[in-house]
Length: 146
Image (cartoon, rainbow, N blue to C red; front, top):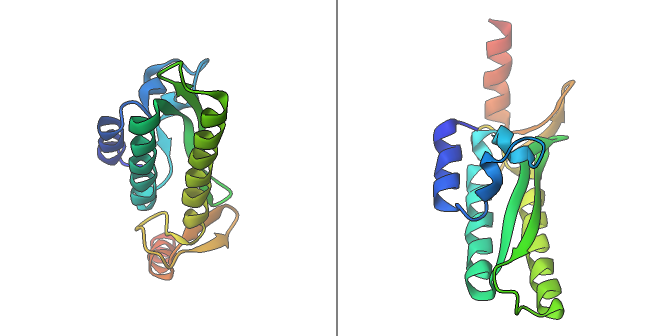
């Protein structure tokens, strides 16, 4: 992902990407967001929803690694409790909701072009799995020929 888009996410959601400056022995976020620009909106929408949950519950999701794997988005995370008075039951419920939001974003990446963000992306296997729309594929193929 372009540095400017990556930093937009980091600046907008500092609590989610808090660990990005930690060393690689503690987090994979030190490598940044390892996917194409086309998934920026998926990540932004996910983080926006999780931030709402955090504000109401005190449960903070911290990104551990965000990347493309096998042509789809992977968002590895852990939860932390800001207010230690959150019950185990509430924590389980809200962590389940956060997990569902992450799963939804990951499943949306299966048909969202990683290059341009078009909702007409298709998972393609060309030595490397990639989710890309027909237009971006054609452009990529032409660039390879030149």
